[in-house]
Image (tube, rainbow, N blue to C red; front, side):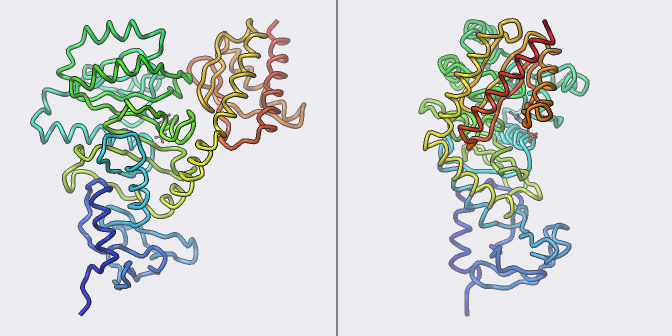
Length: 424
Ligand SMILES: Cc1ncc(COP(=O)(O)O)c(C=O)c1O
């Protein structure tokens, strides 16, 4: 008689245990994502099961119904091979303290919520729940809009945070300046004035703040902060949701041998446009069974896209493509700033993540309109995002052709000329 689980399933289950965050899984069925069809689950060793669980109400049309062809399988009840494969890749390569595990979810905010919950779970099991209940965040940071991580979202705080956050949560949040060179003295002074014994975690976008205005960090200042906080046993959460996946020129937002996060959160480009979030964390911080889970995290459609996108972005980073984009943007944007001191007050950036800061919010808004309208006057306009109070973000695809990028810079220059005419 054959034994269940079979040899392939046992291999996946062992990897699942090693790389996948503990969740609510209880099933030993490791599905063959391709072969399972309608109401029959086929496992990786060929065992068959009639599906009476339907992903707790997800697979109402069964698996790979012809109307969508979507491969189901959610990780809350059993291991999913494509999710385990992606977890292994991330756990082995991310600059997180090893051994690392991965939790998949659906957005950056959910990843940051999960990171926070993992820290709190650790303190709870450790008996430190009530003493270590403060968190350090950076001014101008953005971590998402859900209630738990609102406290970490200080960018445009008056609109995004203040009306919704509770006084209790605010009292537990400590805001420090973002670690740039200019802020280094202030950070040293602020840390000296804090009693870090009560701090559970810090959350910081590295190596560049996004929504807050594209503000690159300073390596030396981050290192000081890291050393001081780690000495006190404070969990270091890096948020690489926006600046990860090659955007800053490295796969996970930063790449320094001295910086190993306790937890690192990702989202956005990790799924190449499909909804995804991930927390890669030191296995020491893993939950106990049943403490955390979700329905769609680790579903095969998103995992397959994520694995493909990961290797394509890795190739772009390693072949120096992002550096080329960086060089073009750095040169041209500084050139524009030098020629338009009346309009532009600062150019900042790293990798393929740049901002041009205008003198006023009105100028920034007008510039965006002019740049979009060029599609009528010049046959091609520019699609730009705002950030901070008065900056525009320049974040092209990492694989943009250099001819296209230079054309974009040419149009950017023309738009500035136009803006200069209307504002003078
Ligand atoms: C740095 C950072 N963290 C977290 C988030 C939240 O991600 P999501 O919008 O997927 O919830 C964002 C979104 O812009 C972000 O930029």
